[in-house]
Image (cartoon, rainbow, N blue to C red; front, top):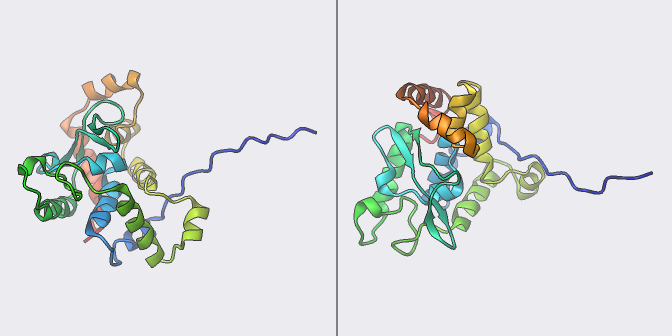
Length: 214
């Protein structure tokens, strides 16, 4: 008898809505880690995209995703090679603005990293974001053993965002928000992006996450 010895990929764990809301009621060791998780939950941004955010990327009602941060190469284009816009909840925008004000590096404000690090032109190291996330999980009863068993990682926020949003908007609008498309689909979606799409997504985000992090 033959057995398949190839390991199958473990499904990414996703927090429940109650867990996602509770995690923002506990005290975090680092405000940058808390806001990074808040951004990931409410926008679906990848960690590299979050670390790459600068003050100039904060709009009045949206976030401009122009870069991805890579430890070896610094600021690069987003993963799919195209910039995108995602509606920004008012309380998340306020949290981002507050972090910018805490960035004391002597460089033009527009160039300041929102999630600033020790050096002017480098953002926070990823370990501070990850460890802050894990510590907050422990405070709501998700131990390290449980976290590993459920396969909950920072990227789980992106799955959480996509799953939550897809329950309220159509597939094209979900893909638009995630920026998660093949090269062949990219032009189609960009050509058809409208303010109406962003308005629908914004309304859905307010319904799902409007009270999160307050």
